[in-house]
Amino acid sequence: MAANIQNVTDRDFKTEVLEASKTQPVLVDFWAEWCRPCHMIAPAVEAIANQFQGRLKVVKLNVDENNQSAGEYNIRGIPTLLLFKNGQVADQLVGAVPKEQIERLVTRHLG
Image 1 (cartoon, rainbow, N blue to C red):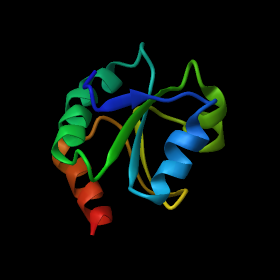
Image 2: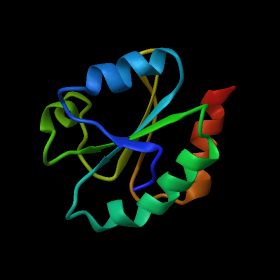
Image 3: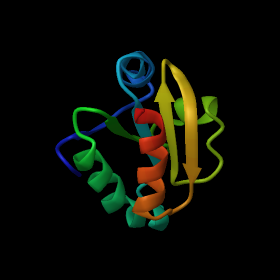
Image 4: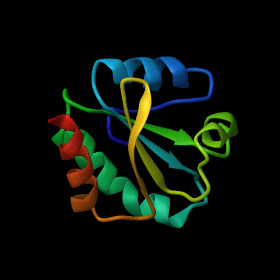
C-alpha cells in the first residue's frame, strides 16, 4: 500500500474521515482481502493518492474488520469508493472502475 494511503477503522472513522473531510476531500476505499476486484482497483487508487497528494486524503477501510462503518454507509458491494466533503458523502463509485473514472470523480470535487 502507498505511504500516503492510511487504513481506517470503525474507531477512528469519525476523526480520520468525517472530521478530516471538513478541510479537504477524503476518498474512502471500502474493500476486503478476499475481494479480487478490490485488488484490481488498488493500483488506480494508489495512483490517485499520489496524483492528488496534499489536495485529497485517501484511506482504506476493510469491511470484514469494520462492518459498523460499512453498514452505516450501506456498502452492499465492494470495491466501493465514497468521496466525503464537509462530513458528508459527496459522490461514489462502485466496482472495479478505471483510474480515469476515479480521476474524474475527484477532479469534480476539487474545484
